[in-house]
Amino acid sequence: MKAFGEQFQQRAGHGSEAGEGVQSADRSVDRREDANPQVPQFDGNFRARLYDLLRWRRDVRRFKREPLPEGAIERLINLACLAPSVGLSEPWRFVLVEDPARRAAIRVNFEICNAAALAMQEPDRAALYARLKLQGMDEAPVQVAVFADRETVQGYRLGRLTMPETIDYSVVTAIHTFWLAARAEGIGVGWVSIIDPKGVTAALDVPGDWIFIGYLCVGYPQAEDDTPTLQRAGWEHRHAPDTVVLRR
Image 1 (cartoon, rainbow, N blue to C red):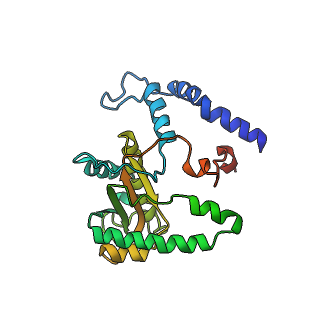
Image 2 (cartoon, rainbow, N blue to C red):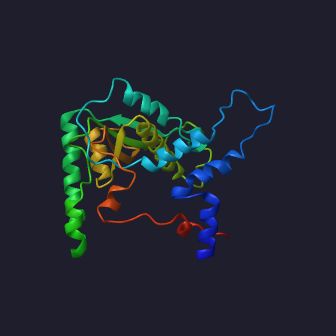
Image 3 (cartoon, helix red, strand yellow):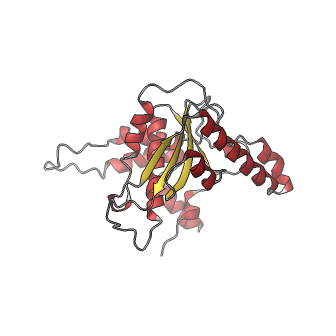
């Protein structure tokens, strides 16, 4: 697989070679005179900044307590709703968790689940796990629970009869879009997954047929880095893209 890996990296442009990838992409831009003038041209400078955005999107755990500007969270949700969805179903449902009692209930939910997860760690990993900061609920000024409405009639079930889970996947794309839009404004997002979905659903009193997808802590990060926190902590590290690609 080494030969393929080298070929893959050369074609894609990776790490310090990302600039070369931008230059090669320039040559593929449609420059026809009859091109639709309303279609934006994403030039090399734009793509370079986009690649920076992708690299610098981090899962934030330490937030400043200062509030976000008025209208910021609504703007980010509007942008998240530009995400693709199966059959144009737009199944995402956003719940802004503002009530202190509901926040406290979800915080307790996390503590119970986190203690159980710690107890399951191997002895040589338990100490490291205990040192990890795995949520930012105590500092993040904005907290958003995101659900999938699997019973939505929008889209007339197009594309999900054989794969109903595409409803959930659609919501995940909305979360990722929200994440990138937030990062572009200097706002951090932390996805809390060590949590019991049924407990969150009950604490927020949402329709019972909504499926919990993710709990997001949102706010300005205390620090920024282009290396994942878990990699810096020694928990895990990124692997080369060629290790996850097959040709058939």
